[in-house]
Image (tube, rainbow, N blue to C red):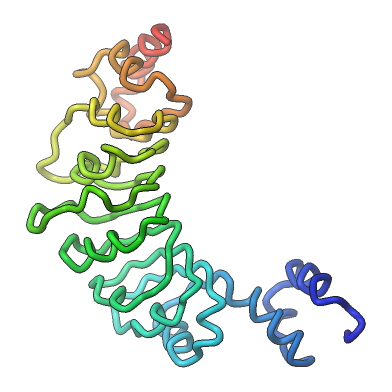
Length: 249
């Protein structure tokens, strides 16, 4: 093992399963360090995993992707230790777990309630390009229009789109299913993106039958993928509607 260059060792470790990587950790310090880089790069877990990462800073620093569903006790120190984290998917009760975090995210998937603490966190993450928000936008605090300047993919409820689309290079948008009280809105908001929308997933009631297919083509001239949430009763009518839109492209 001492004759294998570290670069070659890392390539080998990429092809091992977790059980073999755990065994490699027992060989020597170099093998242990390289194996842990792979073992802890992508983490899926809950309370027990968070406790481990809270107590072991050297392991938490290796985490690049972290996914957890934890509505019970959660150690916020785990996230604070993940200084190299780039992809975070977290479903927890409060955004307090983000306080003191120094990582710079590329993607965020969460259901934190919209409040000042969460807005402050978003303002500190200019590198986010992909965001999924499973909570509704609240007007209880000011929204910083300069936040998330590099955003190009959005998955959220309708209320977020008038705030996240304008002035940002959004190319892909997914509107989550309609919340109570939401109504069809002006799709012209998508024209305020600084990049052309190429992929759109939306509930059919936002489009059909109130918006002509020709208008859809005008709003999304660069659209290459269209996904619709619908029910079987409207499928035939939607085919006619979409045919109208395609004929105007």
